[in-house]
Amino acid sequence: MVYLRLLIAFLQVGLFTFGGGYASLPLMQDQAVGGGWMTLPEFSDMLAISQMTPGPVAINLATFVGLRMGGVPGAVVATVAYAIPSFVIVSVMAALVRRYGELRHVQNAIAGLKPGVVGLIFAAGLSIVLSAVLGNVFPFTSVDWVALILFAGAFAALRRFKRLSPLLVISICGAAGGVLYTV
Image 1 (tube, one colour):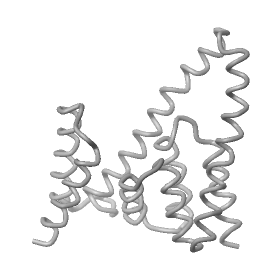
Image 2 (image 1 turned 135 degrees about the horizontal axis):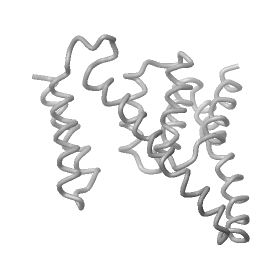
Image 3 (image 1 turned 180 degrees about the vertical axis):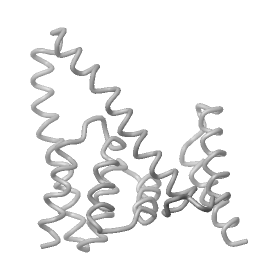
Image 4 (image 1 turned 30 degrees about the vertical axis):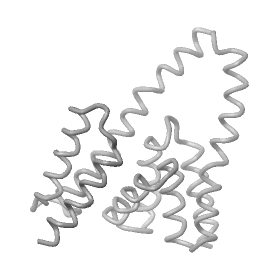
């Protein structure tokens, strides 16, 4: 039964997500957290690990959620279910864009998708920031100052130094978090 739930959930995420891996985060979060499979902090932890491991973040996250829910077979089901709709859609869209891509209506439709994708990414990022910094309790009664400082420092460093490696920032934040939360 868990494999069928994973299959349906990740087929939906793969089918209804446009704009890349980060745009799928709100739908994955809704499936994993809203479906009662895990808490928001657990999802946030899996997202952090997914960003640090090689490969696309959404595929990694689907694999981790599937592994958590159904072991290795669950990881395979979630990963394949997430990837199949994209493969089919991209193949069809590539053929259509090759043939009709210069039409003004097609270009306008593609341009219209961009703001929606940005909104989805922003919503997912905001909920993860709020969970990491303010906790998972509403009303937010306590602030995790370490998380807030690490977030602000990482954000500022990445905005200020455009060529700074995100992997370096993640590593520094992980090491700083390990030290600061231990103290």
